[in-house]
Image 1 (cartoon, rainbow, N blue to C red):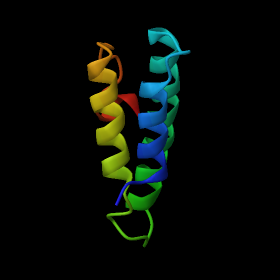
Image 2: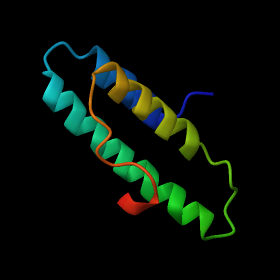
Image 3: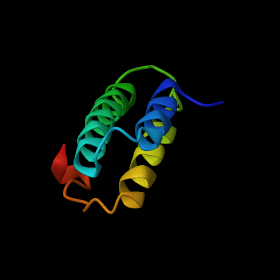
Image 4: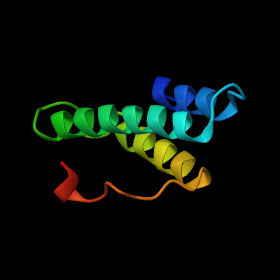
Amino acid sequence: MVTFNEMKVQEIMQDKSLGRDEKIARLEEIEDEARALQRTASESPMNADDGWDADLRAVRLALAELGADERRKGAASL
């Protein structure tokens, strides 16, 4: 099953009107949102596998494809 955020990532990557930097900025917004939701899920009785891992993976793959540096990684970025 594809999540809404995964579809947004695909849409951003396929949008020819967006430049590389704008794509990276939009993907980083989605990444921030997915991290926040993942963090919330880990601190609550919600299902541990709510798709946030898939969202983060899709965003990180897209960022890597764009050659974005990994400025924010690990727990230190939280």
